[in-house]
Image (cartoon, rainbow, N blue to C red; front, side, top):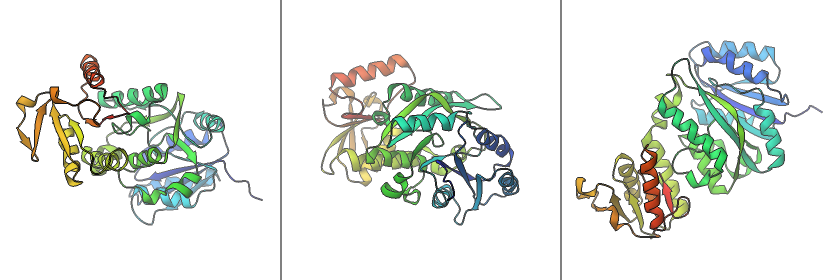
Length: 334
């Protein structure tokens, strides 16, 4: 009987010719060797496919598939349908795996069955990594230390898209890749949250994230702010409140307006507050913006203001707590 791989690595590829050698070399050198790599060429127009064919000849654990419907979601579904592993993970073709990534994942999975396994991330680049990406890196890594993934789930995607491992039964019993909508990584995390999965973080860096100008997250409309806010606000409405329940929306900046648009679309009643209400237009979307002092205690709230300054953050958190509003309980940071 043919020996089945323990881990199936799913990897969509689109025009990644210049990154493939380094990426695949980092997979080949993994200290844990019982894996299969299912690569889906997503209509690349460069020499990616030819290079991938060469790698298939080098290592029989690598399988190359051709996408039948363009896009990351169909590519992931196709890869999964051809996978055999007990556990599933994803890799991006422009990133690198630290040599012990899979080994650390397997060890943690054995200790914490039926959990989402993740770890810390580190950006690398041929140029200077921007402050924004470094802040996101630090925030993701802080979640590994605190374990507060689900308390922060509406703020950003709390698990890096190529830095997780889960039992294949997740995609057989709970949802499939084809059920996802863009941005697919965040939608998947929200589905894990909805299904009640536990997230277990590894204190080591388990993924090296390549920051470069051609990254999909930089160039696709699916990964822009509007798409994220539409996705998470719809999920929030479905999971956290009753349709007849009135909530509080705090913050009338760009993010606040994006949330308000989705609340209006779903006919969710809300009171709107801002830190500078006097400077705002009195009425937006027929909802009057009130001064922050009018915020009611203990009423479910969405907070869309979170400045970079740590002192200001602490002041906001203190104010919210004085109103008996606590993150992940009855107040959610967007």
